Length: 81
Image (cartoon, rainbow, N blue to C red; front, side, top):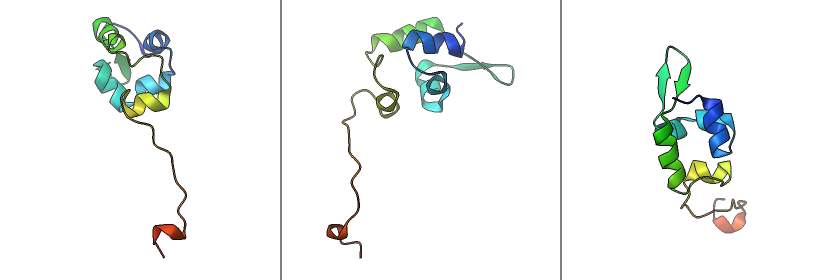
């Protein structure tokens, strides 16, 4: 069993990213007591083998295969007014 800090170090990302609900689901997290979060080492290693490691936190939250989208400013060309 691994703690959040150890998983973040293995994945080279922040602890807050590991605590996010979608990442806890991807990594197969379970709770110990009221507040403790733990991960199985095999599940984390399987996630690392998928190839979603060492990308930015923003890309991880979208998924490693999702195309990058830019934000566009709304102008009068969008026919909103």
